[in-house]
Image 1 (cartoon, helix red, strand yellow):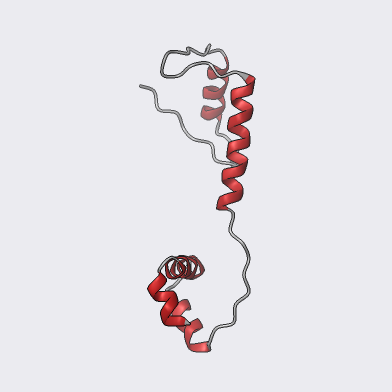
Image 2 (cartoon, one colour):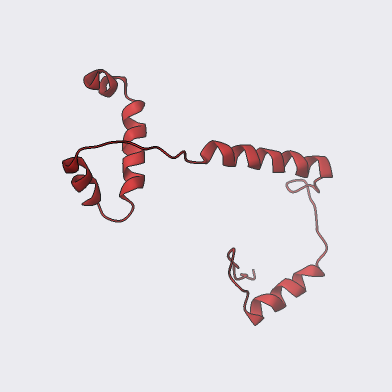
Length: 103
């Protein structure tokens, strides 16, 4: 099985990658039972589902006041501490006992 290089968004493809892309243009799709050919309606449904999923995963901006000590502890976690805080907050809000302790 041939392994193709992945071109990431914003990245310029190498000459080798351009050759691979050009070669793939001439390959006909080969639908089968497990991978049927999609209709335009199917592709539109997948596109709309992807847009909805993206909206659900999109993070919201929040302004929150915390103590200086809390901020020091958070920053001591290193790069990505805001993601850690986000996951901690989500876990706490999903735990009724934690909510009860904070009320």
